[in-house]
Length: 382
Ligand SMILES: *Cc1c(COP(=O)(O)O)cnc(C)c1O
Image (cartoon, rainbow, N blue to C red):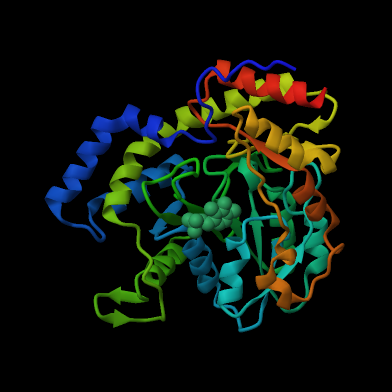
């Protein structure tokens, strides 16, 4: 088979190009912080928090150092007893449960749904015990987990809901009362990450907590800053977990670009849907009609999962980079062997680890590049 060369190098993410377009504004923002020398808790931190909160329907935003700390702080704010159980999906990035494990809480894994990859609410409810302290749901790849069912379960059992929203910032969900809720603003606390590759990324590490409750926002603020109410007065044992002023200043610039970038990602996803729907050998990502999808990833399933790795290598040899999020379910990670789960206990998560493949998707992916990706992929599957 004779294949054309890619129109221009195809990247999974093109941050250099994204930043080049914003260069003068990013430079100004950096220069302003350099001039002020207010590197910790400078004015840009509060300004960014207010702007992001307004962007997400008026939620309180508490910035912190990264998305993993955000999960830790969210759990700290619940003041759970040692050993309390925290229900999380078996198919996620490890940080989702790392925070719970580090705090001496017990991660309880449940399986995910085969179509949306998100946590299975029926499995969550079945896993609730008198020791359950929290449910940590993940809005994987940019689409909301079933917030309707999860909120109902959380309320029915009096168990807090934490939303790990590192991948779905700006996604919305149609709640049964007709209200449109923002991902991360439904549970007691939402967490997010500004790791550079996320939909809203800074130029280093960063994260934030989202909550609708003013009192909880104040508590989270305190916990993120050494548990202090005022300087040198410590009410609680906290963390040193702050967003740098420099990152906040850069994020203010990048936040203005987020709606445009999200729309661009959605346009790429729509073109993949059109081109790949019904193509034998792959399944396109399912859409929950109640949720918008901000396409942090565009993740297909390779029906004959035994061919997935060969397909990935072939695509790579043709200049099409792809990624496997995630190659191992959480219970197969050596670090979590102590939880005592066995292979076969979370069949959907295990199957997805064998079959998923995330295709290039970013705001600057050109139509010609995408056509090339589709061409190579369909040739390989034919
Ligand atoms: C990226 C990510 C995190 C962790 O964020 P960091 O800022 O890297 O600590 C947590 N959960 C999920 C689902 C993520 O994708």
